[in-house]
Image (spheres, rainbow, N blue to C red):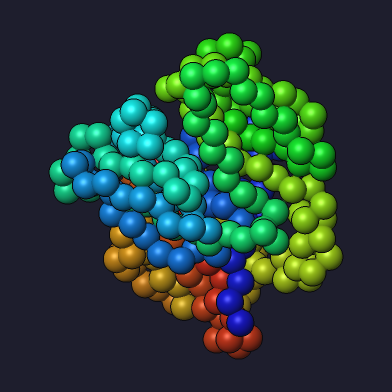
Length: 253
């Protein structure tokens, strides 16, 4: 049985942590793979897919809206076309799958040359990721609650956000609360070297970079990442006794 542990990354949303502002958290969605984003190579994000560029450096060209630049990290929804602004070799981003039952969905608005208004639906709220709606008084990191209206009449305006469905979220807790309580916690996160599990179990621990390359493998319940470069990594811990694998995203700084 495979579990993906999200508790480190859902809580920072409410607390406005530095990691959430920098969008280096892991979305509570299934990871389907990674995608290399290169300069001069357009990539259109498939249906039901979110692209998450977690690297803290660099700029993504938002080709969909007149090649405007989005500073990384950034999160972009399906149907949008992007390319890297300055890296020929490319930078990998994480791909997530979502559907109508997911409590986290991307919001993409590309304005037209006429006045249009959009309203945050009932029982939902939007977390602002990227926007150049100059007529609105909000910025990255703001939360727009149900009933909030936003308007624009500029053809090159864009608005990117994450929509949280409160009812779907509450429903997911009733299903997964047992797994979350039993899942071991890996801490501290972010870290500059040492991490530990709050468990006496011995795990097969594998560490991967965001391109999918395994960079470390150990056995036990502690992990020393001091030899690794400062970056974001995926850590998989296999419990030989329960046959469960938990996946974590860890920021080393």
